[in-house]
Amino acid sequence: MNTLYKKLALSKRAFFILLICLITACGSRQKNLFEKNAITVTGQDYIDHLEFLAIDYLKTPTVKELRISKTNKSYMEGIYKRIVLNNELVLKKIITPKFHIIRSELPFYFSLPSGRFFFSDTLIRKYIKSENLFVSLLANEIYRMHKDLYEKKILVPLGFASTKKMLSLYRLPLNVRVESLKWSYFLLKRAGYDPYSVLSWIQMQNKNSLEFSMQLGTTHAQTREEFLFKSFLAQEVGKKQSETENPEKNSSRGFYQLQRSLL
Image (cartoon, rainbow, N blue to C red; front, side):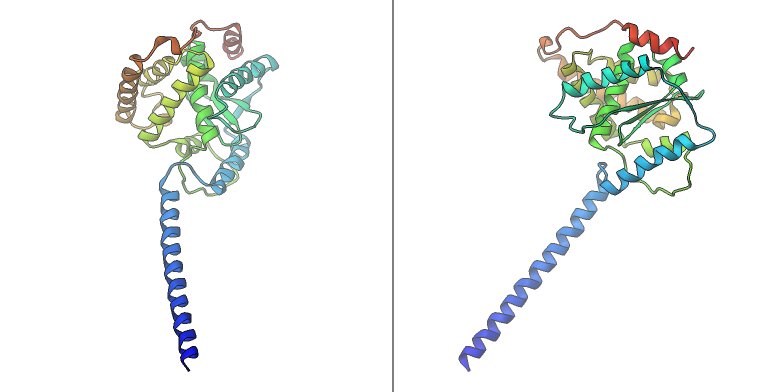
């Protein structure tokens, strides 16, 4: 009888321990799910949706893609390769980038997880006046793409996607944007480009805030972004100048060739 009683007591104890473990696991799972939805780095399911959305975007009747010459393609791939190879510990995706130039009066740019980079011809022709600006833009997109920085939003498959829709999915909260820009600074520094050109890129957009409103959102957010990045630079200025070795400041022949091809 005593042996049976002991077995029942042990069984009850084991049951309660198991129950507590299950409750704790459920609580942790709910917390993890909450945190996963709260953070900006999205899950693989959403990333896959965004990759398929690129196909819908390029098939949209109002989206006119321009042909990119082999020379211009090689030029942009060269910048991508240089930034990635000099930042292999941070940029770990192994992909071949694909560049798309879209005919549009609106200046815009965005990237997608599959390694696709989109720019409007007006952006490159009218607003990007130097190679430093172009490299700064591309560095930021490379970082976002490699880190899957895309805020999770509801996607309704329609078979097409306008530029306005793509840009609405592309926007990030201000604090995430600023952190991404800080990383762009470090990526450029390690690749031998001028890292301070990131600030020039931010200021160029702020000077043309009306034209870039669809891209970035409110003017207040853009101004705040510039202020926060300047605060970051103020801290970096105190560090050794030798950390940036011979940053490039003059535009290359490849950049001018890209601009001329869009005239």
